[in-house]
Image (cartoon, rainbow, N blue to C red):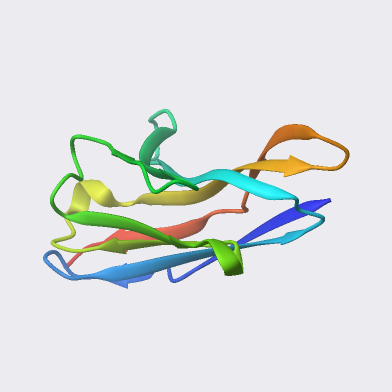
Length: 120
């Protein structure tokens, strides 16, 4: 079993910053990629940012230049540094990982979500 635990969400004013963290634990052979999705009320879940074990990154157009994804492969941890936050960034942010598990299988896992609220 693999678990993902997010932290770092909270209430922040417009223009402020937050850093989200997500740590994966369990029986893990390798994590091919980790990333963040978000879901705002009444909207579909959308990709925010993702990073592969090789360091390739993808960002939603709405967050490019404001958010930075990074990872510590040794700790199976991914981070999302969010700056210049806007009210439209308000959502539940979910960590996800593509994990190689024994014997050799690739599965997707999801965290429980952490609330980010941007409001004055």
